[in-house]
Length: 293
Ligand code: SF4
Ligand code: SF4
View 1: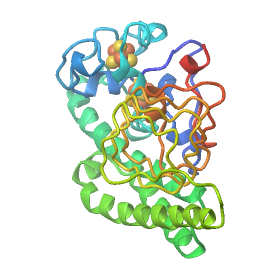
View 2: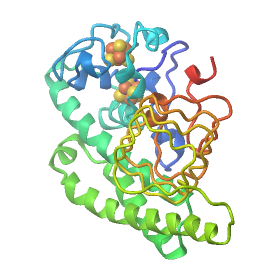
View 3: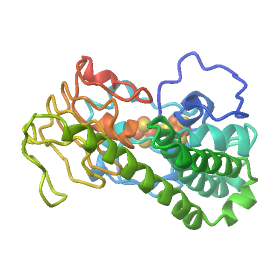
View 4: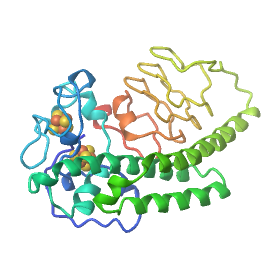
């Protein structure tokens, strides 16, 4: 999503330390990469069908989105959901030192390809920082820290080196740690309930919960990774220790739900769900503006 570009500043970015702000989109310091580099289609909530490498019709000459304030009313859910995890500004300001794809059109195609690789690396960084936030166990925390540093170093590679990177092999190592983290955290929340007298329905098998009412189901410590939760009613549900990596939360009713200690949730997922001021989110995420209107 291309955020508003008012008050555009020539801010000097520092990427010497990993911090949350480095993993959030900073569109003022980007050149609208997501609005150019990606292929997208109108049926997925984007303005029109367009090829990768073609600028969106709404991308202005200053790289800002002309309809940003109206994305919701225009039904552009794809734009609302998109999150680059800070890859856009990294490519713009670090990899290419502030040169944009209009200034150096001969390098534009390479920039788009580098952006796609950087997006993958920043997504891994996001999940690793989330894993650390969950404080699984001392041993795995050391491994997560090492992997975070190793992954962060990749983001500083030159464009040529990034293009040669084996991201699949690196992702495999990261995913192994993420799975172990999820298991440890979910076990912790499940164990806590053994002493609780509260009885609720359990989830049962399957990944498809589209349109279902799960408000009376115990989801603490559940593995809902990759689950279809489109328009599922989770109003007021406690999702502590629930793994939501890759879960489809489009129009999921999260009003009043507790996601403070949910596992591997992203801003993009939250942006597509329904919530309100009573929805509790992890400290790493923010309530979308449209929840508060
Ligand atoms: S790539 Fe990221 S930083 Fe750049 S415009 Fe898109 S969301 Fe914003
Ligand atoms: S409408 Fe176009 S310019 Fe605006 S955020 Fe969506 S893709 Fe980017």
